[in-house]
Image (cartoon, rainbow, N blue to C red; front, side, top):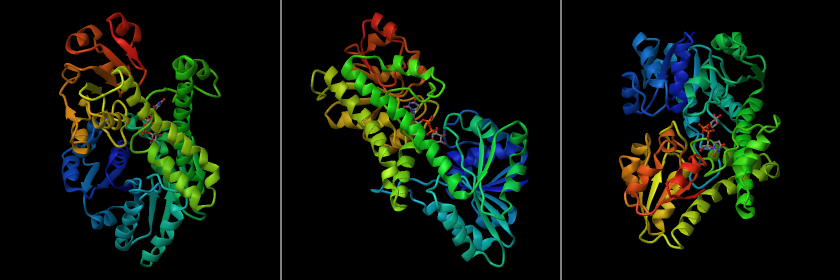
Length: 433
Ligand code: UDX
């Protein structure tokens, strides 16, 4: 099939390359000229394992093309995926839908044939209906169908999650052809047994928001238990393991530590609360405010522990921060807990040296006032405390004896419960978590 993907960020670039991998002919539309040039040359402007190879393969074969022209998009196909961002509005909880809306405003007036627009972006419930009405107003003597087909990919596993999803969800308005088209697009996956769930658009929109809200709740639940463990002298990791054996609970997403960040979970739970408020159902999601609060407290708690280790004051101390990405296998620093902690520590008078295997460029751009090192060893040079804030394998594998040679004091705080504790303690480190 021929199809267009509107927006080639983390979601769109992956989706476009994976659709080409499924055998489709794909045109990706990206408005940022610099990103477009990179993608057209077969380069991925962000770190995502496996994606550069896939993208290059399909750019080279011609199955995937990149353009900045909506006119070209309108000519190319009659199936369009919306994959643009829905960030949090400045100073508000709600989602900024201006990018999603502008794809409709720019595309629909250019269409000369009936078309299907499939939304992949995470949007507040009710968005598909609003966009459908907007498309009807803009369409000239043609039918434009809108349906919602949310994406559940995780950064770091984006290619795998897109090619082998846990489920495919499509929310369609009555009488439309979206279900049939999606069965064709995802035919190979459906044949492989991937559950294919058809619902109405509000349900599909809510499937995505509910999934992210549940994941965020799971993380904050174990972090709330971690607060109690701190007070009671118990071991939260052992509790996670023990309760995780109960299949109803499950061990995944019960890793206590610095909490969640990134471009999805934090803003999605806030947008969900805001939308529930608009719908008069604010009370139903009041627990999500606490999920957010628990999560944000992890960051201040990390700063407190660092201050405790520094005997009450961070002034003049040298702190090594290992990790800047919001999670390993990503260079994404959006709402990164690690950089938030680094910033707070610097504000309290410490000098902070940050190192991350992949996220240095993005960190420098977003947090230009922090100091950056080119290796973990350099970041730890003369450090009073070493903080491990993103669980990159490179940090898990660090040799505590070697690291002991470069620091001023052997204090390590494991913000992700990822270090081999005994090994660090044997090497003479004061280990906190
Ligand atoms: C998430 C959802 O997992 C994905 O399905 C959705 O499509 C987009 O949002 P992503 O943001 O890529 O994906 O990362 P994820 O792996 O979910 O991690 C989110 C955050 O939670 C990270 O900061 C991670 O460090 C943290 N986390 C995760 C924990 O603190 N503990 C855990 O047990 C798991």
